[in-house]
Structure formats: C-alpha cells, structure tokens
Length: 346
Image 1 (tube, rainbow, N blue to C red):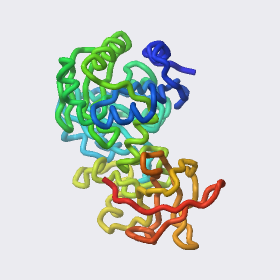
Image 2 (cartoon, rainbow, N blue to C red):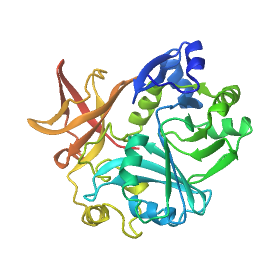
Image 3 (spheres, helix red, strand yellow):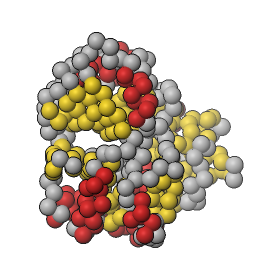
C-alpha cells in the first residue's frame, strides 16, 4: 500500500487507517465525536495523499484547457482558479478538476475521482498539434486540507497567506494555498512538497488546527449535501443531477467537450434525476446502495451515508417523482426497511 510523507507521524499518534485508491489514509484521530465537534467549531487538518495533481503549461495550455473542461479557463489570470468537470462528448461526468493559473501559460490542477494515470492517458490523446506539456503526479506535490469556520484564522496565526474565494497564492516555492471547500463549512487546500509537508502539518497544529480523519470530512460533506465524485454518481451522471452545474460550468464560454448536451439541459431544464439529502430514522448507515421507495415505486439509490447525533443522513440521486415530496420515503436494505424524509440542500 502506498504511503504519504506523513504516514509515520499518523502512526505515532495512533490514527486509525483505511485505504483509498491504493493509499493508506488516516480515517480517524482519537474519539470520533470529539474530533467532529472540534472541527465543526474550529478547523480540521486532513492528509489526502491519494489525491492526484497535474501541471499543464505551454503557449496553447490556456486554449487547450478551455476546450477540454466546463468552466471558463480562458479568463483566468495568475492567482485565480476555478473548478470544472471533465466530461465526454455526451456531457457525462468523467471526473472533476480544480485548475489554478500560476502564470500566463501555466496551470496547476488538483484532480477529483480520477488517477494521474487516467488523466494523462485521456488528455494526452488530445495534445496532438498543441504546444502543451502535461505532467501528472500520484504523489508529490501532496494535498493537505484545512477545513472549518476557523480555517482562515488558523492560517493567519500560522503566518501563512489567506487567499480569497476563487484565488490561490504561493507561500513559498514549495507551498501553494488555494481556497477550497471540501466540507461545506469552508476551508483551504495546501499543495505542498515532501520536504515541507511535516513542518507545515506541525505549524498548523500549533496554530490550533485539529487532526482530522477522512470519516469526519465525509460526515461534514454529507451533512451539507455536497456530492463527491464518483461516489455519488454513475457513468451516466450529468453535472445538473449532482448539483454541480453552478460551481463547475460557465454557460457563456466557447466550445468544450460535452457543451452541446450540458447547455441544452441547462436551457430546457430537462433532467429527471437530482441529488437530495435524506434524514433516516433509526440512525443506520448500512444503506449505501439501498433502494429508495416512494410508496411502491423505486425513485432512487442511496450513494453516501453518515451517522449523526440525531440519526443518520444520506445522499441519494432521486427521480423527479420524489422531488419536493413531504411523504415518508422507505429505504430498503438487506437488514430491513427504514424511513426517511427529504431535507433541503445547503
């Protein structure tokens, strides 16, 4: 199993580990409820060694990215960035990407839901006559993420710069800080080199950050109704179905892969499934993959779930028949039937 540069530090603090995409990941630090409350009120620092990165540079890099991804890359200036979807020619999501303009002809990217190998294989095919160099990494630089309402204050206390929404800044040649909300309660990603990772981790803990495991991050994002790719999607998912369209799409830019379908869906509003948050009675989280029923009719499938203080919360992509209903939903699992109600997304 692959390990990040902070693995020994997590071992020494008795973190509980799991595996994501072949990497050993800290899933929990200490008692779960204490960790959660500390992050929710302050800020949690999480190590995400499995997250892949890429760099695209060259005279044609800006035009190339603008033609491949759903957001407006052409308009990005150095110090700014945005989130896009990677789609096929039928507008179906293949992955997500945060792109940061670091120079006029240079972009750094943080990938979601795809590996470095996949990204290089797919987009390398499109670089034929373009003057673009593509470099990918499933490793250094590494991604640390600081999430929570006090994240900016902790960065400031640690003597690090605080980028505004849609912006990023280079603290030094080995550390870039970007505005990135992974939790629904605000935060930042830190793109850091191997030699710098341990000192930055220590610096932020000293400034008041709480070590956070992946379980707490998942609980927060599910509670706040944020879809994660590919967990909450399928090979046929559209950005509108996962509630991502306003964040990842620019509907006034030039042509890109999947544009015709995505724009048509947006103009006509013709999508029949949409992600919803469901409050489940009984507190079970053994519902992932379970069918969601409205009366006798199947209206969707649970894709994510987390236990909360008041029960359990799930995300499910539901058919239009269930949208806005105040009727009780039934979640059919192998261990029995559970009741649920639709909650508003935040």
